[in-house]
Length: 461
Image 1: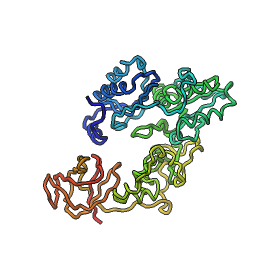
Image 2: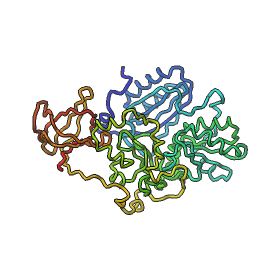
Image 3: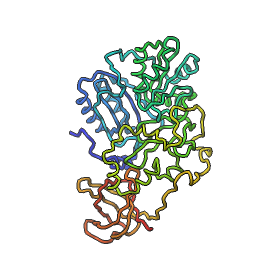
Image 4: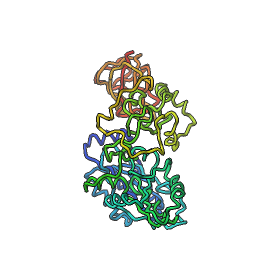
């Protein structure tokens, strides 16, 4: 009985491409009393794995929180697996307005203490006494009321690329930080103001609205289904979007566009940009905003130190990050003083540029402002086929050019980075050989994992 993933993300991506079927990216949540979260988790994995459902799901005694990718043809069968449980009958699925077949590449279901880390003691208040749910049209209307205060209950890296006009956007790194801040900031308005809140998919507001009612706020409202559902409704009903910019999402896409407005800047050069990326240096992996020019100049790195690091051997890189646990500190590092144009807490409703517009393509960067891309003359030789983790052996197919022992090669990919090595030993079609030609399969002993998307280059200079 399979209860965990047996395929790597790269292998799964290859299968998705081969299938050529449309997949839907969606999210949902439900608060409920679950007696045995571990058994519940295992039952879900068996049912969803059979439907080729992928995603990141948290289950706890208090319920379920899920972001997923489902084959479109399996959506009804998937809904049946949900409605096998009374508390999920008729559950709302927040379907994304932009789809990416690779939004999730694994099915990961984890048992947690809570489905959202809020640090609240649920025994001290009625978590079911929630605020009034508002659909998109109702939400737009209440925003026009001068008696309304609207609050974004997401984190700084989410609100920076997009938010509702006029919203309070707390400069916080976690949801739990925003609760006491907003409670203190709005304590004078408990009786007479409409406290209107929103988040990505609605789950954070579900708990927050109950918390603020417990704190004495009389008129509490929340956006039903969050920004994801709002975007779908305004599209279907032809409504004006009061949300401006991009909605940050927690999958491979890192965001889906709601309006063409770009309200944030590249953290390195200041040009209008709202594309998040993770630093290429695995020891950093910082989440930040980076434009195409800086991505090219900095080789997807957040700083010159990280750019220098990715050109070290893997052994040296591992040695540098030994003992350093950045984990949950990644987003905090997004406020590093090395990112000159990071403006958390200083958000504006003003559009800086329009997506897919010539306005975004401003003047090229001055090379004095940012390091130029290191020029390496190379020729594409082949691509990665498989990696065998126990013997640490990588398989490549040779497609374009001969390889010889003594050649300097570059293995490059989005996750692997850029790894340069001297070809000292290789097996060609299973046998020791000094030369590999087009059509051959070669295996190399490598101390790092390769992916299906990795390219094999021969360095010429």
